[in-house]
Length: 515
Image 1 (cartoon, rainbow, N blue to C red):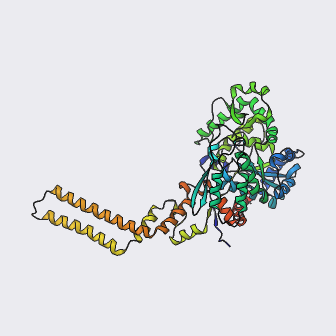
Image 2 (image 1 turned 90 degrees about the vertical axis):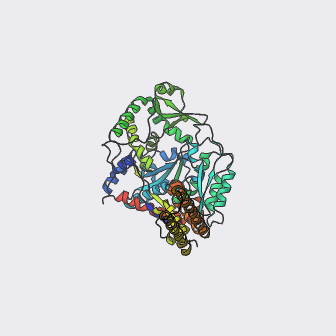
Image 3 (image 1 turned 45 degrees about the vertical axis):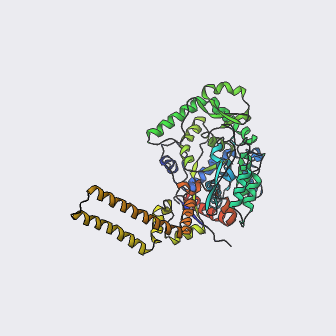
């Protein structure tokens, strides 16, 4: 049985605006009041649940969610007004994208579990797969841990700008699948890789493949995956999106006021407002175009419901309107834009969505832990390994060689001083030049000795490089870069359990608050 990785729970790295949203320190009315104890949670749950009682929201969206197994059973407990949902979501990424995608889903599951266990209210996690997103470049490349390093896998040619991922067809995906299979060769839990290679195939779209993979991984955990590009979602969203077009000018004015207020308070707004752009897209042949505010009224009679799609500030408001959402588990960037989302909800006089911080995790595999232990290094120290590499190279150099080179340099200095103090008829410039040449040659000699020593410790240096690549890929947080599929294939469900346990620690703090 494989030794399990260490799953480390980290503080979520947030900027000032995200911190203000999390702490509820923005001006009153900017965001919903965050429940801080069990009494506040019960009141908040009632506010979210009661308007959806008797509304067949789960039936209306069933084809967009298509729950099965534990996910279907859990969703059935909350539908019809009996409970609430905890949501999160992410746009499509190749083979599921970076690790934080799974972490967000597990964060929603952990909070739903805590609400059920502590408050006795049925709660189901729902993952909003943003297949109506049009940022192909964002999710076209993924980084897979392979043989201790990171290997990139990429999708083929991009579709035309603005194409929804539900309309972007996969091209030349077999190369990426081969890289995934090599990265996971010999894994004890190959079902994770089979799910990915089955979902991603020629003739399907980026969005469809993503939804299929996420459902295969998340539904057994009890997490429903909603396909945002499904016609039923567009149909249910249309009344609110039409209102957003009809009231585009007043929404824009509210957003401008909120954005200016954030800047006045010293914050940098997460979403830059564009002049004469509403919060609604019209989709034609799979390509999204922002409806101009100046043309919003005139387009309403001419556009069908199935062609409307929300932008990033409108999407949380739509989601909150369609589902009895008690909270959205957000990353740091998402938390920040909820400071502006509240202004949209207020302008439309609809429920303001509540965003809570997702968990942040890091996985330290056994081989990386062994490297850290051997060299007595912390994870943070591995962000810059130059000092460690120099130390390893120097330590591997025979003491006699180091002493001999130091003695050589000292002798060069003594000889030069002796000549300079003598009556030798040599120009100072010539002596300085000769000394510089000798010093240069001694430095070259030292580099060659160190290089020879470095070759002898190639394996150690390679493991240090691997540890750095997996802990700090491209110099940034692991969860924002590394695709966890090869790790899941190697360590299986026990790794997911460990990740969920870490998420539960945050969920417990969120629910119990000051109690």
